[in-house]
Image 1: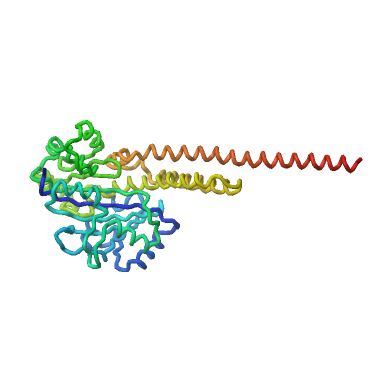
Image 2: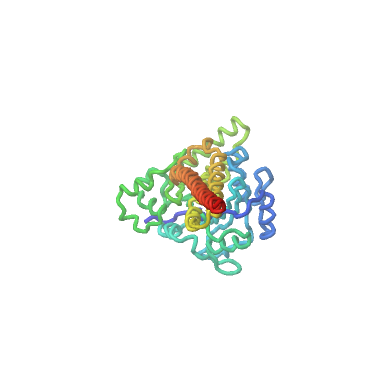
Length: 396
């Protein structure tokens, strides 16, 4: 068992905003519901330390703008009391993705000197664990429901994700050594399996097969809705890296970029982890919204021709809109980390399934039209026969 683990943990929920609107309209809605909310602006001077770190990371990694348009708000009125079982830091980020009409609620908190079992407990039910706030005890799930009611968002999330950044892992300073000696534990962190010590090595290797790392002191693993980021900030490798960046920045640019010295942030913006995880989950939520809508469509399918045609057209329009949004986000322009995360979440097969649904709907729509036309032709034929018979009768 490894004690003294420092971690930043995030639970994120993704919702479909039922009404289309501009970013400014959504901002006004947020400020009406939460007047104390802080609006994030990558180009403005941010006073809050978390927003300042996010700005520093976004400017350095993305040149001051993401590959997708997003409006962010820090909801500052939720403050846990400084009690033993409470996190050392806590914040809520509300994000609106204008191009996809999706909303995410992410809850970020930091824990210090906890055990491996505690980290696994956060993975198992951390979003339901209650913390003591000024107005009572709340869990992340309960706070999400409260915020959704205030913003008139759907009560049920389309997608959810769990992100855990470990900045200290006992006395270990090498990720390769951690993986060699504790791969089962890493699997436990990722999956929430408290019986990790009894899992076959082949299974742990399979679960840890999706990973990325551009430095020897960082590595991120991804599986299903979970993401585990090892970021050993106290390691000698990280200290040497800071020294190199300081020397290079001063020699070439007249100073070291603030991105390398901003330290730890509960928002997990170091190395762009938050942005890349958010990107993958946003796409997954977008296409899964169509899949979940399919069951509702199928339940209401047996009705009149006109209603069936209208429902099929609406579903077809929804699918085409989703596919257009996916293509407009410029997946081809993303980096290696985002590509790995998309692969780990099996986004491409889901998109292919959505395209297949579109083909089925095209055939279904043609069939409905054919059925209606055949019925109309049959009715006209019968009417013609009746008129002909009536004319024969009158002639007699």
